[in-house]
Length: 498
Ligand code: FAD
Image (cartoon, rainbow, N blue to C red; front, top):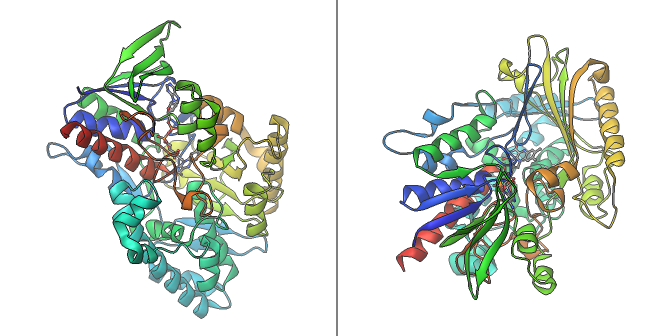
């Protein structure tokens, strides 16, 4: 009664696998791609090493339980270092402001601003509010793995729930505490970590700056993909069977149970695999549509779990280094609020995007040949949608717009120095990971849709079918998807004890 089939080797699926294998269950992971990690992915070419997915690791403590075993700990598998300054922020008027981990460094940094005293006071007040939001959300929603509004009320009680800032939007809560426009833009863009809009997310999502300032922004030595390799070593140690290049094509069910899955092996043959529990790291909507082949009325109910945004992702090898860049850089839109509304309400490609640019050689020279640079450029754009449909050519035009903006904002002649280029559109992201409409972070965080909840982790129809990853609670980003996997493992072990 302990045979588990996991669909997909993303961080969510692998986290569940580790916890279940540790408890003695027989676990097999089926992954359609040729390597582990899902969106945590890698491209090595001509001496450049590109992390295709995540570049920022936060809350490393979330991963500890997966690696602590027999006297070993996380650091034995994943060599990490803190990155500070955490972000360098470039604004159109030429202002450049760094975000530092320590309050004292921030006090110094803000002296660059004419209203430095009031800016620093606002900064401190805001970070204190962010800390309170983190603490209340952590002790219930994150730690207990709450899956919906009624569970939340049951855990916090009506009063406890009030400590969580539902009344304001994330940007409303920022504006209330912070007068300085640069700081407003910086705090608002933390919503990038879950691919949503600060105008639509609830105030408590302001916990994100605290997560980064309070616990650090981390880099994994050798590149973020080393984290996927560490998960791989852990799976091997625990005897988890991993079948790569193997796509799951359906989930079999009978009454209120799933009985197993059907896979297409590398030779294209379909095989049936029986299982006592099935965990899908494929997102809830694609899995319901394609693997469970659910009827349209059931699928309609899932539509409220709208995808988070997508992005175009450009990896560049450059034959020079731009010394003004630090490891993580942001080039802001002139009007962040209209940028959010255009992408998340109108669903149009941005005309003046905020651009995230990561240059990992600042922490790790092994990521590019000597004298060269490795940069990833990521503006957020709408998921593939019918309201304002876009084409591959539109994405290429947006890429050019971004390069023009970066050249204007100080990366002179950027285009002339490109020696390697790798470009991803939402269509590629959808094809590669089967994410819902090219979404990068799973389900969007929106206080009007489901009070910012994502899909529940246990299937409503089949009691031994579970979901993990960015489309489920608590949501997108590596630490959160790992939590979903660890919570599902706990739910299965509890179900077995009954
Ligand atoms: P995934 O990683 O999507 O894994 C799902 C796996 O399931 C995939 O390997 C897929 O191939 C497989 N699969 C799906 N269907 C099937 C099937 N039918 N059969 C077999 N296999 C199947 N997060 C951060 O924390 N920090 C960052 O800096 C950051 N930056 C990002 C930048 C980019 C460009 C992208 C794309 C993402 C970024 N993220 C970041 C988000 C982060 O990558 C994701 O939240 C997280 O990795 C998702 O993990 P997951 O387990 O939900 O699913």
